[in-house]
Image (cartoon, rainbow, N blue to C red; front, side, top):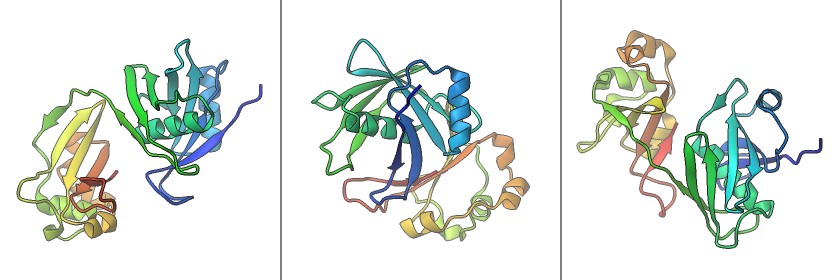
Length: 218
C-alpha cells in the first residue's frame, strides 16, 4: 500500500517550530493496529489519519500519539485541515467538518500564503469546573516562577475537565509564560496530585499577534 505522509508545524510561523504533527490525508484501508504502529514508529506528538466520506466537506480523522489513540487534539485538527487543503481535498469556500468519534469539529480555512495557512475550528464542550486548586505559592513553585508572576485580579486558576482534566493557570506576562518550567518535585509536594489534572494550561493577555486575545502554552 502506498501512503502519502505530510508533516505540519502547528502553532508557529517558522519552519521546524511549534508542534510537529504527521498527517496521512488518504489512509483508507488502514486498521487501528496499523495506525498505532505507524504512530509509534514516527514518534511525533501526534499522527493523524484521514479518510474520505461521501460528502466532500466531511472527513473522518483518527489521532494517535506514539502510545495510544486519543479522542481529540487541537493541534491535530489544525494540521489535518491544513494538509487537506494542500492535498486538494478542501472545498473552495474553505469550510470542513472533521468527524471524530464524539462528533464533528467545524473548521474554516483562511487564504493560504505559500504553504502557510490560517485555520480556525470550533466545537461544543460541556466542561466540569472545580475551584479547588493548589495555593498560589504552590503553583509558583510548580512552575518555577516567582509568586508575583501568577494571576491577575479578575482571573483565577481553575481545574477544568473536558474529556481530560486541565489545570488552567493565568500568568501576568508573556515573559513569565515563556519562562515557566515544570518542577516535578514541587508538584509532588503540593496538593496538585489529588486533583488528577493531566495537563497544565498557562495563558496570559500579552500576545505575539495583534489578532489574538490570549497567548497559551500547554
